[in-house]
Length: 151
Image (cartoon, rainbow, N blue to C red):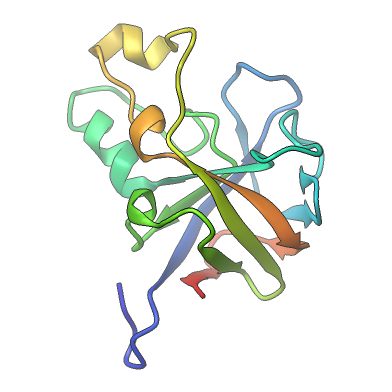
């Protein structure tokens, strides 16, 4: 959604991490984004192009509409957003996240080598099409309820 000045912005719905790859993430009251690394304590953090994953709550709702009880973090995303069609943003787009952090989109969607449990339940998963990945340009604390905006 655009505010009165024409800036596209939304909100952080949830922040989530997991200690191991290949599992759902647990929601936290806040987390720390580390410059050039990712979410502190997350298995996917490191020196690569997919340091942070984002998925819109609107995408999660598409699976809920198929009768599956899913919540933020179930698709292994670090940041769940609302109000921005993040899957339509271009590579290189920068996002201000919370009051301090900045991300740069490095990948839209991903190839799933192993189908997740959600895919096996409903024959579909939104993360490969609508999830995005980013690297951390500027670190900082983020938490649900804070603004996320396209720069």
